[in-house]
Amino acid sequence: MDYLQMESYLKAIGDHNRMLILKYLMTESLCICEFTELIDMTQPAISQHMRKLKQAELVTEEKRGRWTIWSLNIRHPLYPMLIHLLSLLPEPERTVASLVAEGKKVVCE
Picture 1 (cartoon, rainbow, N blue to C red):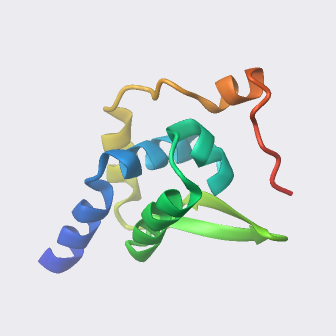
Picture 2 (picture 1 turned 90 degrees about the vertical axis):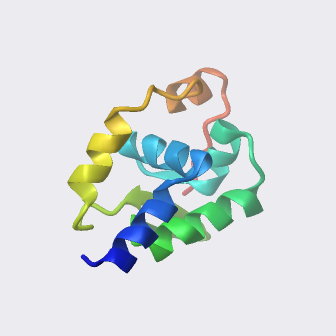
C-alpha cells in the first residue's frame, strides 16, 4: 500500500455515517433499505456512501433479485485494521435487533 492508497482508505472511513454503516456491517450483511431505518437517511444518501465504500473496496455487494446486499470485504488488505478501529467505537443506538422488535426489519429477498 502506498500513500495515495492509504489516503483513499482513510477518506473512505473518515465520515461519521460511513463509520456507522461499517459498524453495522460488522454484525451482518444488510440492504440499503435497512440502513435507511438504522441511520435515518434517504436511500440516495446511503447509496452515495456505499458508492464511496465500494470504490475503496471496503464493502462487497451481492445481487439478490432487485435487492443488493452489502457486506464487509474480508479480503481487503486492511480488513483486520478496520475491524480493530470499528471495535473501538461504541455500539450504535439503533440496532438490527431493535428493527426486528419494532417490526421494521425488511426482508430483501
